[in-house]
Image (cartoon, rainbow, N blue to C red; front, side, top):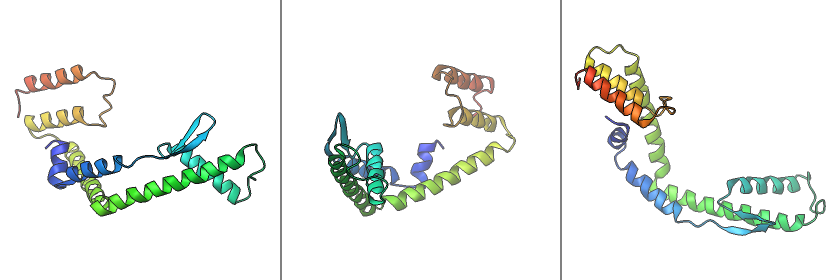
Length: 172
């Protein structure tokens, strides 16, 4: 079974659920709260949201005062707006996730995927008893996402697979 077929078999409907979750979450607009000089402060920029949260915490915990830096009060106001918008957007994302049951389905798919991965690699550690088993192992290794074949061209991998099938007599 190929990984996509395995996912469909183990978690029926998960890919449909994922598509619906993606469709709904991607439809949620990001919010631009303003600009700090040339920098756009928007909810799509997670780094800016994180920096804004840190600045707000610095002021709240006394590590920074609003009169320490010129224009810091305006930036503080924008930071508050950005964090508030990001929190509201996250609440909407969480509501979609909960309504669709995506969290539970995703957890189940992860667990089943882990079991599938462990099973496949347990098979890889067993000596191949037949030529078809050896061909399966070689094809799996070359197709595996963690095969470390990134420097190999797709043509080289395809030719190697064709060579294996030829030499092993189309063992399948």
